[in-house]
Length: 378
Image 1 (tube, one colour):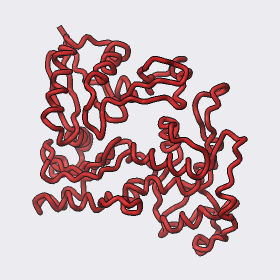
Image 2 (cartoon, helix red, strand yellow; image 1 turned 90 degrees about the vertical axis):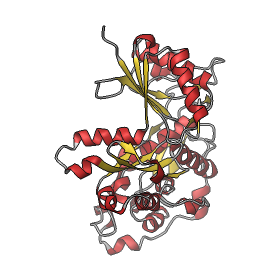
Image 3 (tube, helix red, strand yellow; image 1 turned 180 degrees about the vertical axis):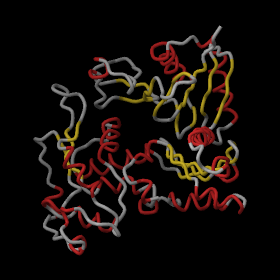
């Protein structure tokens, strides 16, 4: 009798789940319960990999959120059990008592948290067997299996940069084992970036402090990493076509559309045409010297003036200031190293013979590494 292996990446923000042997996850859904304004019940949000009428009608606006994980670690096993039960029955369609489980666990999980996870797996769901792995080791193993053309050194050793929901890790991996003594962590992740974007937009435009999922969507669609922060700050203060940063996001009205959207996607994409300082500027700039001499025509009072009759808001420098937190957390008063320094410290904690191999084999994983130009900046 065939016993399926369930692969479960139990993240703080999203659950990615599927069956062993498949290339892509069967289901990707938020790891939380929601209570929309129109409901008195706590509901499991729909999967982002399936398209149904239920997905389109699900209203995330101002929904209350309960999460089983906090700062990456399990704090509410009962809540996690309810989410997993829905996942196994409605999305994966498996019987846990006839299946094995491959589960990801955050680095440095406390023994009490590990015991709570084991009880959940064996006592509540009665899985036949369990294998627990950390994300960096699995990411390294996947890349090593894909990169058969590289040398044996790179296949055995890599540095995994995991920018997750709760924090960011720089983890050296050697022969499929994470070197825990060399792992470095920044207490910044996708959740902190979304919260910072919520604060910026709420201060400058409209109050969106309760719109976590909406601002997640804004962040994923409109934010990008800047290759020259000083130049882009200058650009953000200009008006007219020289301001490639300005774009508009339309909020849901609950009647014609329950999800927000970018008003003019082509306008939003113009910023991605800006190259590095050493590259050629896009056509909108004219000459390369013109990049450094924008005419600032926007007045500060114009920036603060908001038309409350419109169900939308504009973004300019917020688009690159939010991802820039990962590289310069000190700018926000956080006494932590940036991502580049974090990587250097992780590499320097390893044996000197591993340094060149780690620097030539850096693997990026996690949702916050998907910002445009993230790898170029790093």
